[in-house]
Image (tube, rainbow over all chains, first blue to last red; front, side):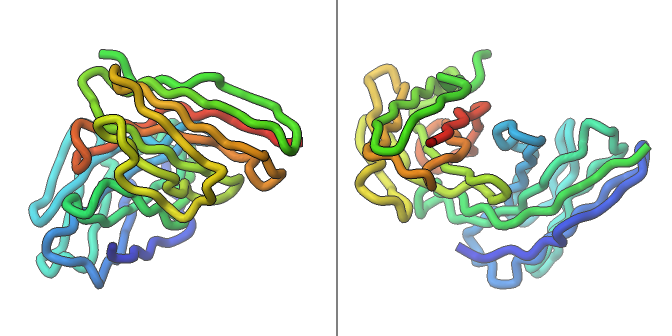
Length: 111
Length: 112
């Protein structure tokens, strides 16, 4: 599976948009980009995933560049409860379902 | 719609003992994966069960074993516990092997 690179930490003001970047320059054509987040000592929470097109759900938006080498997770109006570690994961669904977690980005939302 | 549940929430064992952790998948899901998360690290894949068989395994010793029951629930067994086995153990379920995984709250295992 392709490796991902994320900044170790980011800050965001409450009520502002949080934009979390992820580089996955070795991604293959059949690999999806998944985002999870983990609030302290809880299980990871699925946020969103995509293959090529931009995606949006009730939690976030996922913007994938045209060459698919990077993506951005957008939380449109961050709240204090969005403070968590955010993981960007790339994997091939036809190679099983093993998620490989990297270091993630620790997002701190501040009042 | 019931989410993924795990039991127990916390567990304390001593070195050399054996432990069994339990997981019930999200309603409608048939695949269960187990992960180990050491303090300050990201989760690491242990193994995955589908149709009551181990389908994929990560880089973990044979002391780690599992089982899936006909109702899709699963157990993780760890024998001969080491101090380094202290971690948060996470269960994730999905519909079929290749679908989105949803995680449970985890079981915190402390080995003394």
